[in-house]
Length: 154
Length: 302
Image 1 (tube, rainbow over the protein chains, first blue to last red):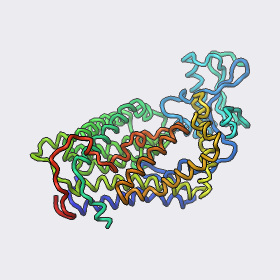
Image 2 (cartoon, chains in turn blue, cyan; image 1 turned 90 degrees about the vertical axis):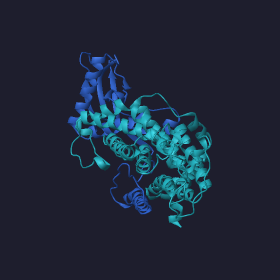
Image 3 (cartoon, rainbow over the protein chains, first blue to last red; image 1 turned 180 degrees about the vertical axis):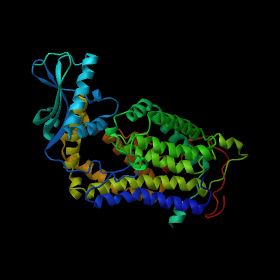
Image 4 (cartoon, rainbow over the protein chains, first blue to last red; image 1 turned 180 degrees about the horizontal axis):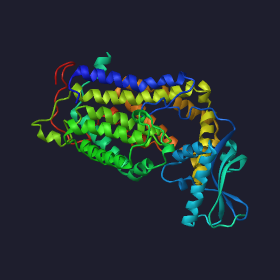
């Protein structure tokens, strides 16, 4: 417990320096974020007209494609799942393991009954389209595909 | 001058109410995330990306240890909130909350809205914040007089708050867009990126919010919002110059988070609760009055 002014002053100085210090990350070629001492890089990036998002989709028996919710990956928020998926997409065996797991899960839960295969894809979307309420991909890369056990492919 | 500002005397009850609000917020925040905390900790090792104090760990700690530490944190935070044996439970709450939230953030994603909960908890936890409005205070024969001991934690919490906002502004200005960030185009793009990610990943079926549709009808509002939020963040340190200015800035900063919620559907819980800005306010006025004491002279031992 802090009882003396000198200790309080030193504590205060140390805290202010520590909280402000991550400002140096803005001047580094590869800034590194941390917690709880951060340089708060959110919302500072420049965006192009097309954003790429890596996510799960399901191929249906009719040959169409539907988006699958990332909650199928387990607990965590959307942003946490996004990071998890991005990491998986960098390596083939991880992508495959991820889609295999989701395919087994939806078979076990008998969920998304029309889905016969699960894919991990990176798609490009135009930012302007979103404001119109439209979300059609303008590009697509498939990282991994897993058939849902017990369901006939399209 | 800085010394005078930092050691501004404050009533023990102001710091006490801040402790209660902060503790209650932290307790409910962590209690509602028991499953999230424990199940995330049981995730695949490849998703473990340690940050902060967790960085020295090469591998995740056993889930049973995470559960035990989280339960200990609940106990320490509850004791911190009611001000029971604060000399022990205050610092314990600070350390365990720092650990719990940092460990949670070491799984793929750092959540920046938790930073101030941890930092404020550390400051209030090591200060004499249970000399009033606490179980410990029942042992005191009379209420303590206003003192620098109750003032510095509030001043430091405010300083830490405004620094984080100023850092966010510097990151935008040092980013690839620089001052062009204020044009509003970047904010608009960011809103779209966030919306697209949520639509594609969570399949929430939600398109642009009504607030976004309103902004799209009056595109100049994007510039107003971007310029306003940049000025609010960059000018945050001004809030330390005067308590009334601090309160006005607090209301503006809180309003910005309400706007973020309405436009981007991003919830900065701690900021939206208002408790982030509590140290700027005379919270003791929320309590029934007690016999007032005169403020001691600057530098006097309280």
